Length: 288
Image (cartoon, rainbow, N blue to C red; front, side):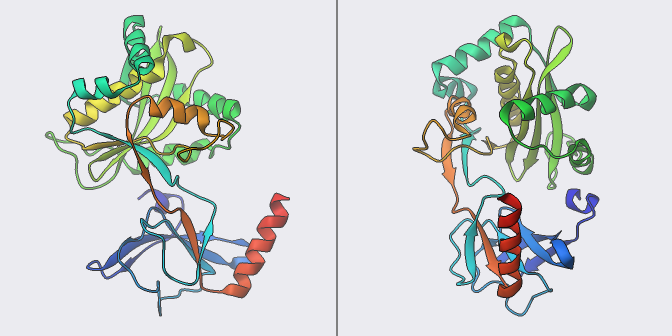
């Protein structure tokens, strides 16, 4: 799987009938480590990990409900805790009607301009400069190129005979104008949901509105494959000011008419308070 391809150990915990989670062993300085459970654990769990310690300083979790464990301390989000979900069970006509008028207009404009879409592209060479441009434009840090290439290689599409298999799928989708890649998305399909993980666009030909038709074709394709939801993967909290760093991308995503879905955030369940305090101090000094 993807995390193992990065050299990380993956551990599964829980009794499956009450709660379960998949934990990734993450390194810390001085030989320390912590466990990270993305978007989990799931289910109902009491005090976490009793008697199951493996020398970790803390366990970082992203549960659906706020944990009752007294050792849990809220920390900065790793995965977004606020998102939008588009219901793909609705008809295409209903989805179009639910969009903001400007979103619908930009989608049709891109179609009229002749933007071409490739939903399962191998052209990462053409797409990667767009991710670099978008990261620079938005002021956020990218993983290195190999990270995304491993993601696409480790989770290949197993689509056969009209239905997706039970494992996760990752793929690159691109939009071309006049033969050149001007927008690209990295998508993931799992458990009936298509998720928009990463997006990028060129500074050139922005007037042809390529990202709009790219998302629409991804939505139509997901519906055709029987997926039930389209997760836009990260928006600003409801009521956030215009100065919020995600305000622009949130306006774009809200234009598609999805429903908000919120989770309580990211928590560290501290299993070694002394070393956790040292870790927090070192992190604060590094960021100062």
